[in-house]
Image 1 (cartoon, rainbow, N blue to C red):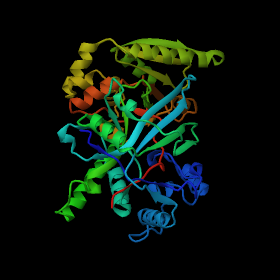
Image 2 (cartoon, rainbow, N blue to C red; image 1 turned 30 degrees about the vertical axis):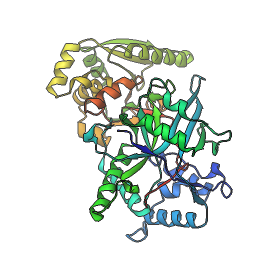
Image 3 (cartoon, rainbow, N blue to C red; image 1 turned 120 degrees about the horizontal axis):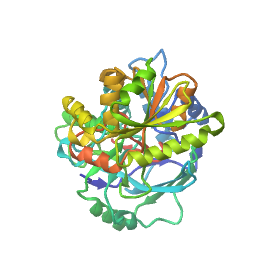
Length: 440
């Protein structure tokens, strides 16, 4: 359940640093090249804390985690980072333009939430996690004793009462446009009446983790680790809480995008099309070089319409000047296959469940273990890059997915299940370097 509290946060001292040079994307989307660029941008860039460089000389006493802790301590000592005078909530707006030219403004706020197990069903996950990332984040948390990033949480508020409760100062604390062109605006809310109102309005709301499952489970592991060594802990001790970003799932400006599936395993595409025809109605979109983009836009647009009320997905093949869309026809036969695979009813209605269980596992013969390890199948967020992978011959084919429905995510989570791997992509990502939550 939502049980929020303001944060006496640590932020960059804007009289000593240029905020443009110290923010970074989330750690898990930073490439090696981007890591180098961020390192070169500033000796105080947050990347040095969230994703420090590794060396062949690293050992137990000198590694990316110990170097992060050293930098963190030095920045605090030198007032590069400063702690707020009193607890506050950070109201966070992200303004951006969609590919269709529409201006979007997603609003939310940063505070901390009392940690609770998934079993309480007050905080709901929707994705599976893997051990490697959690182990990495736990080492960082143990060494630095801080939350450097927020868990992205969704709550329901159809009447927009919580957003209306915030009275924003005239001047934002931070107003910075990142390299993706997203304007990030942060206001400090330290009015106690406003904070109390928001706390009461949020009280006992169910929360759905949109992004940050690994970090949430890491925070639980860190809490249990500290508790095991401190039997006299108090409820309000910092390690019992985790920093979160909260936004309203009923807001039309909350956007979730699909993640597409690139197939790198050698495939008999003619045979695959024949097999797919046994279960799906197939629409074909032939194109020539002169009208390729126009036909692609039509293909994607019509796929979204079809997928609104049907199980559907698209496909693009190497060296074939056609796009294909597939709409499930043989529902009874496919449901029987899914039942044999013990797929719960709430998951049977998902495009991705059918794609993975029937098409990728059975027809393409890529095991579930290989899917998790990304052997033969890879996951890609950008639609343009998915098509490019086929066009530059680095993939046999790509499955193009329609936009996931927020209600489906909610239904799956509330039923106690999880979506297939890499089902959702909430955009934009939260910027790192805006607020740090100390745990000591």
